[in-house]
Length: 137
Image 1 (cartoon, helix red, strand yellow):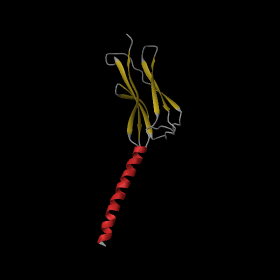
Image 2: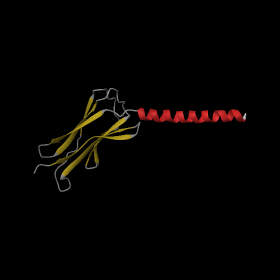
Image 3: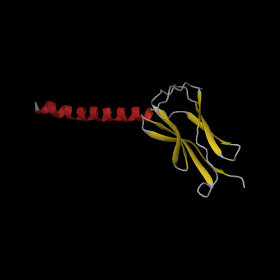
Image 4: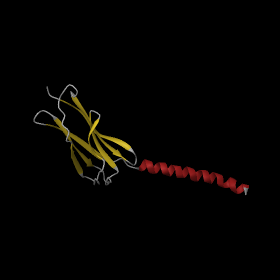
């Protein structure tokens, strides 16, 4: 009996190692979403600024609704987001419009924006676009 146990111990170690390797490879094989984002800054009649943005699935696979979220931050504050996303087919684009208008004052000499996509599996943040908006003098 002792001889049998000694013979199978290396096999057991090999099987555990193979299972760990397969798990790590399956996690590694998950592809990054091929999503492109573009932010547009609009100017109102009274020189205010507001934002719209478009996300496009440039990949070959559908991005399942609910597995990703979209956020737009301006000066580190969330101004627009979609947490209940729908399926995004390959080549499909979705346009979003922010309702918040920014006016030039002492506190907002410039606007730093960040468009971000987060995914659940793997849990990760993806910066789609970031930029800086200044007012004309």
